[in-house]
Length: 149
Length: 137
Image 1 (cartoon, chains in turn brown, cyan):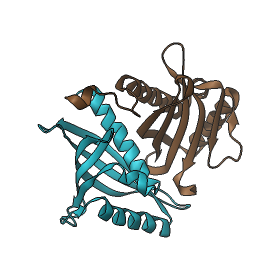
Image 2 (cartoon, chains in turn blue, cyan; image 1 turned 180 degrees about the vertical axis):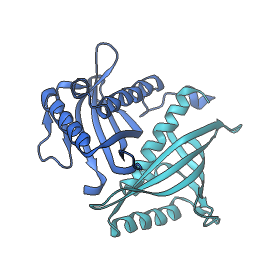
Image 3 (tube, helix red, strand yellow; image 1 turned 60 degrees about the vertical axis):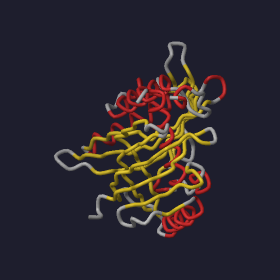
């Protein structure tokens, strides 16, 4: 088919798209398992993580890990489990081999012995940078919560 | 269908849905051909052409703003095949998550969406869409 072989402006190729999907699966599972340090290592050393709630973003791996550890402790105290589902991923090339990645995220919250609910709906905007090993790290993340927009 | 095109379609839908969810009607209309048609099982008579589709899109965006809700269209379970004329038929499930201002999100709609897409002007565009709303008999 002609359309399958032509250069597709604006699209990131399939191999990269699949790698990034796997990166997010791994990253979100680290967070949902409460592995704060490994989670923080999916950001660059100087990574920035901002949300609609915090006036000041977390800067650097130590601050990002501390935020995750705090959230994990709160969930444990509340007796709930969160699962972050990312989807509707859209990638655009950025400078220096990086990627602008925009995705939707749902957080499914399940209380012990109870039924899951859709807890949050968000848009996640990342600047991803390539690593030497062919993987990706988040240099900058902004999470926009739909209930606060 | 081969990986490269399938991935393009997944990215197409991500961009297409985020345009309407963000209320960017012009960017959304650009993902349709000029003569595109949209129909659904509640209103089988299709809206024909971008101008007509624009009217409906502006109304939907205005309604969501007036009600202070955000809609997020999630598509998945994408099944795509090449048709003999070089167009693609893509069938997917779409759910809409609705979040009221300062409220909790909930599943608002569940649908099946069948599109015919063509390459035109250097990008994928929808030529024909039929949406089956699960709550409409």
